Image (cartoon, rainbow, N blue to C red):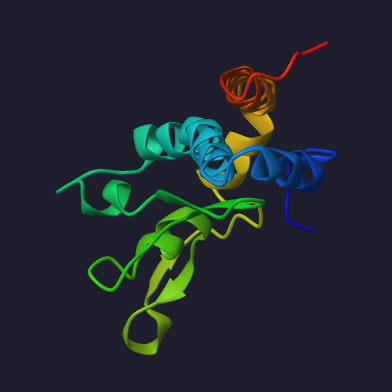
Length: 136
């Protein structure tokens, strides 16, 4: 099972914001990107560097109700191998020890869980206060 952080009542919160103003749910997406930024920064700081291309592929992708952090691109298709390991190349001749939980993204969720939760809580509270809602 992939590690996740769930926000109970996020859909209802987003729907309520949309009833107030159509532009407010976009702010929720931006708030979730801010929380995902903790994972992105963690992964980028620990990614091996030669040119920096691999680290630059770690990015947050979000919708109003979901945020994901992905890695790799057409220009850097080797990034998942850097993260998880395995065998690649001609006759699987290049080997990197396999880590089921990876080296960068999943450990970020585990190690930075409190910081991610705090960032998300603060960002959603900011969205609510900008919408004129009282936070208890």
